[in-house]
Image (cartoon, rainbow, N blue to C red; front, side):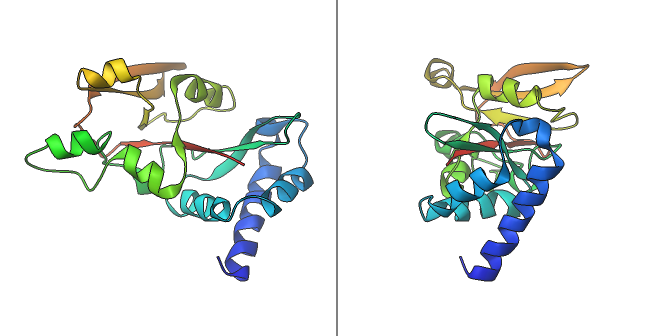
Amino acid sequence: MKAPEREALLRTLKTRFEKHRRRHEGLAWDAVAARLATAPAGTLAALQAMEATGGEPDVIGHDAGTGGIVFCDCAAETPAGRRSLCYDREALDARKENKPEGSAVERAAEIGIALLDEAQYRALQQLGEFDLKTSSWIATPADVRALGGALFCDRRYGRVFVYHNGAQSYYAARGFRGALRV
């Protein structure tokens, strides 16, 4: 990543960090910036990809012992640049007609992030109200996936719901949220 792009990304992340302090109480931007300065090379590229696809990444957690920082997609709705995807490669290959452009699991890997699991999704919802009009694929347990299904979540009626669907399904309003540990 070139210096101007890097600086622009860091400014965006800092602005979002300062605007949403409730998401990371007790953590200062200087600690985040220091962690990012020593992070592996692909870290900023992953954050840039999260930003470019509409994820609006922000810090949602940290480990005081290790200094680790957790970034998560905090866009109000599932990231617009990551919608209309089936769950994984197996599901994509199973579709004979009207295939989506890709799968959530593969796109997350390309970006360098991990799909949120149910616990992480519920924790995110404690920090705000997300997916009021959209839904997000979440990491699906192997036993559910082995039966052809996959899980997704959203927030409706003031509650977080976990649902199931065939892994090969895809919808314009369903994408995925990811997390990145730095």
